[in-house]
Length: 454
Figure (cartoon, rainbow, N blue to C red):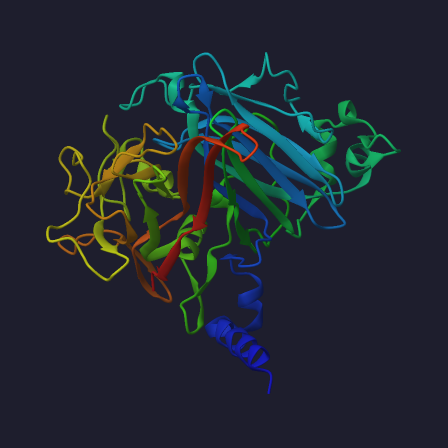
């Protein structure tokens, strides 16, 4: 008996729900295989871990299909998810596009040596990168400094497959692999040549600190069946499409069944697909290896639940100079099942919030101030344990109830979240048997584990 086949069939049948086969085909969901129409990269950074030792963030996106594609690439700073740069990217069949986010004198920028077509053109000169800008947040309460662009997260959204003249222009030809005619890609023609996309995008990001000898990676979260109605092409300079362009049907795996439902809006469907009650992961703080641990906890739909700086639903507080704080529960365990004698919270606690609250949209939760990523969007957990794991509860207060999302399938509890944990091990300079000095720093990363929101 093939148990895997049985379980897969059961999940497929459960996923039909009240909508039948058509509902499943039109429902946005997180694809566990990593392929989709919309990709969300949980974190980028160019912060300095030590003086003169900044991170660079190396981005890639892959078109696994046999169709050329138009996609929107969008970079968002981590405090209030304000856009700092976007452009259109054209991928030919089976194409890969890569770029590097690098530090500038006052913020961050991007360069690419890739040959795929972008409009407008992205710089290839590390001395003169395409710079991130602060226009969208220059007057918000958390400050308008370009320093905010040094960390955040990324969206890549498929606008559709491209055909005809545009597909021919962006397709790589000859032994050099250069597209036929990137300057020939013009808005009017590209808009006409874009049809409904078929997904198949995947990607990842590498956070590398060359001088410290550390390297962390993260896969993009892939939303499949994001758009099922038609092309969503927009010209360069437009802030669309964004995550609100999703279908309003969603599909989630609850651990035993697949549930399909309908939300009031497309963004609510995306939130349902990403909704979790708990985040689980480990930490290591061993003294001998000078270990440190950071958790990235990103809320990629948070900005859509605010009108200006005023919260509307799902999230908890208005946006102020210290962020928009959402209360969470923190329980710390060591590796021998022991829990601390006192409740664990962040230190220092956020002003006006509970002892444990996450206040930004791309948060870094660190342990004993190890701050692996040198983040300024950081919350610290103090613990006497040198290693263990944490249960972060996102359900929030019940009076009044927050962190709730109503859908036809029921009320979700928790928050829409993505992220990972990063652990560093700093052995410093060691000597080989032959007497050679080598740097012995290491880094590793681990995907978060969750309980479903429904």
